Length: 446
Ligand code: SAH
Ligand code: SF4
Ligand code: F3S
Image (cartoon, rainbow, N blue to C red; front, top):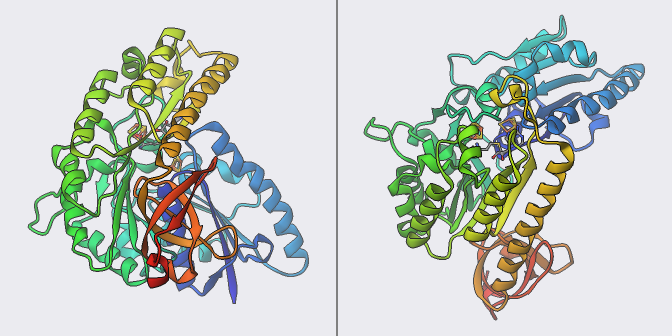
């Protein structure tokens, strides 16, 4: 049997696509492997968001070139595919930079992978079109893995933040219909998934066709999904502050499947920088939005993304970011040094922040965010919570899962609890996960 190795970089959207590419290859008779040395097809699903992410693929391709040569000596053929956002952004250029590559395919055309692989026997191929047909209509049924699953409901972005490549690599905003999403969710749940994370670059801009033909909101979509028997939890990511409709806020209060966790990137606390980033909202508008969300769901855990060292960012601007973080209090966060990306407006600016200043600001911000995360986790000790068990834990007899607030928890319970929700008392906070004890009888009953 032929084997396929698929490796994904970048965001959840890419992770989802990688799974779907594995499905496409499985339908062609390829079984999945984690061992690249035995793969007949190697797919790198790449990310272009920051320079470091994009460079990773070329060092990987260097290694693959050697591997391909070795396999060829023993008479084995290896097809190398570059997919994802670097493929979309660089296209044909990849062929000249990386001689081992056979196929370059963008995020909107990977349903054509079998054809492209066949063509690649004659010549190296590039497909980075945004095709008129919808890839979702051409993908084989989804195979399930695990208790939690991602489900793409919206793709692309029309926001054009000044620093960001996504509108160029993923194209314009498109939403899938409620019926298509519910159908995929049903199959996932039938296959054992209990928690679905709805994903999109701008997931709360979702406006797919509803059952009556009129556009549905993300709140409507989650209501429709609540009717899927066996589904226990819903999450969604990533949201933009400007598309946060009232009914989405309401869903956090009224839909019991919607988990009390929200990843809402703000990028900066300085109004001047937010404007230069083309985010189209102020720091105070973000604060007010969070207040409204907290009124609807007081225990909501908040997470965000931050960029330090955007061109022109002064010490005073950065102090505004620190102030916003202190005001709000996050349970988790991602923070990055600004990385100029060719083709984006911010990359043209001549007032770059020196690397040493970026390093200093990132360390200060991460220190504050780490302290908030630790304080948040420490405050959970002693509480009674519900854990959706995802897998066996690090030690024998342990299982691992997540709280509604997306904290990782390990506790003693039989593996038969995987896929169920178990009431757990949190007893200790470690640096990366919490530890707890199942309520007496609760785990045994599962
Ligand atoms: N669609 C999401 C996030 C997209 S990318 C949103 O709008 O929030 C994920 C994160 O990468 C962004 O939130 C941002 O913090 C970071 N990012 C994007 N472009 C970047 C760049 N050029 N340099 C550094 N970080 C960047
Ligand atoms: Fe990028 Fe902004 Fe779109 Fe997010 S909203 S994907 S940061 S352009
Ligand atoms: Fe990266 Fe593309 Fe996602 S650039 S962050 S893989 S949308």
